[in-house]
Length: 291
Image (cartoon, rainbow, N blue to C red; front, side, top):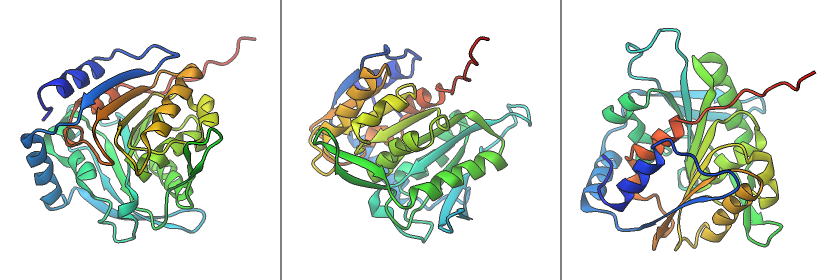
């Protein structure tokens, strides 16, 4: 599934387990030049019927907000002990999928997790909530660049994550959050809102939180992907967040697509490389102070 050429080499290196050096941004620059095979494969996923394995459910949050969501369970636990706990992946959608039909959020980016190869290689519970109002809102930050803050629906989504983590055999050290556009912005906002909950985040084309908040989440591994021709969610703000995280002692990874506008790069939607990076991350238990 991973395309050949520069993207494949970059993502293979990313998935190799090598971590960025603390205090600096690990940057990758790639040309935006999707291959016909990439476009065809993604188009097939988008047009394919929604898998019945993505079970439709509804959650009512403590604030009374209803959150429709789809839940994909691991295909099999045959290769693992029945008591084994698995990762939970939270997939957040963009503003174009706002609604309550429990279907609009199931874009190709979400549906790809049910593909047999990806499902086998990355056994996990995958939850795709749908919000009926924005999960992230934007306003200028303290540095003058655009910044996000939690939208009215994000607390209910975070409550859903807590609920699933309490009911399912989920490894609390391997809860991941990913998203595109508004969903990517909300994913980074979630790191700030729920410190210690998420082991890592992958944000595609986000508007990040105010850079002043970066120090509070500098220890959380983050992978940001953004096109440098994006005018909807400006590239500069996202890159400034990575720099602020690094300045606070973090080790963010930032992938820049040259010439790409506001979109998900097709070669990433089905790629294993960034998922391998994601699944390699885990929360480190806090060490109590010595007496």
